[in-house]
Amino acid sequence: MYDVKSCKAEEFIDDGEIRATLEYAAAHRNDRELIRDIIERAGDCKGLSHREALVLLDCELPEENERILDLARRIKQRFYGNRIVMFAPLYLSNYCVNGCVYCPYHLRNRTIPRKKLTQEEIRREVIALQDMGHKRLAIETGEDPVMNPIEYVLESIDTIYSIKHRNGAIRRVNVNIAATTVGNYRKLKAAGIGTYILFQETYDKKNYEALHPTGPKHDYAWHTEAMDRAMEGGIDDVGCGVLYGLSTYRYDFVGQLMHAEHLEAAKGVGPHTISVPRIRPADDIDASTFSNAISDDIFEKLVAVLRIAVPYTGIIISTRESRRARERVLAVGVSQISGGSRTSVGGYTTEERHDETAQFDVSDTRSLDDVINWLLDLGYIPSFCTACYREGRTGDRFMSLVKSGQIANCCQPNALMTLQEYLEDYASDATRTLGEKVIAAELARVPSDKVRAIAAERLAEIRSGARDFRF
Image (cartoon, rainbow, N blue to C red; front, side):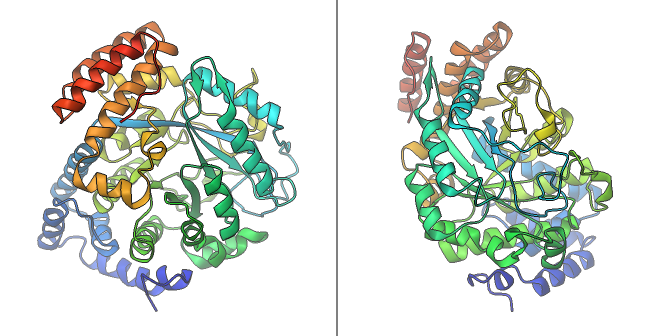
């Protein structure tokens, strides 16, 4: 029985409700009157239900599909402007006890070298990331209670935050580790993490269990209810995601939105971010064996409808995607991307990338500076801002700022100031020249006269050597 407020996985992600939604959308995919009504109501920027969203995703009418993409662009601009938040993943260990059939870290893979970073190796990785210009990391480990216990993760977070190299500092550590206990989530909160990230992979329970045949991750309920436990443990910001291509994209799209609706209904605030990775080849994983892989066109529309359905939620895309694919979805919804990423353990400090320990193949292999230059050339503001987290604007406090529109007086100047830091400390000459032009143009778009004036003063101070201002 479907119950959005229930904390039982099979009640807030109800298979019957998903299948009824699939049937409803299929029956109305050419219902122009209904589709236009949904688009018009979505223009109020208050989001859509999972059923309404799937009707838009399933729409087969070319003219209405253009309206959908246009609305997504307008909503993206209203809440995020031209800002794109930058981050990098940091893989600490690829030891894992699970049997996930789509991931090369699975226990039975004997070809992948296993590696776990020492604290000194973590220090070197972090310095390498700081020397690129990164301020925000997402740490990743395989699930192994012996090799990767919570104590190792906590010690690693302490190490990361302690490192100050030249003008570099990691100001926010997000954590992507396996589902755990409320007690362990409390420990992560006390360690000062930003967002707790956990990908569902797929919401189709039967397929989920087949894709995770062995190991703790086989337990669908334990995994799916992890966000509830994380919030019970005091973590305000959680990030959801599925791996598109494991199951049919419509099913997982609906499940993803139902999960967001559940967190809003049961915990008072939806996910801080939603990630949209697609299945990629890696080591002993052949992506072509997954028949549900989706095209770039479907992917673009899926991101667009997500942006319409959850207008306040950040949408993340990684370097799994090519430059062209990333460019398409940036325009219609994505607000956070990685740059200069390595998906291997120890990959930032070796001349060779050690791709033999990578979790997946990277499609966008450009350096961070190349990515920054590209974003600037497209008219975006690459942002290294972590101010909301550090000022306590998390969870419902962050969402209230976004919904009121006041976030622009924080995010816009913070984005410009962190971009200025990057230009001063790390950018190539070409990127610095381009960035200065973007900052000059975007400063005028800060809504508040007072905030704009203060931001202009601080930008000048950054050029003179000061660092780490924030609103």
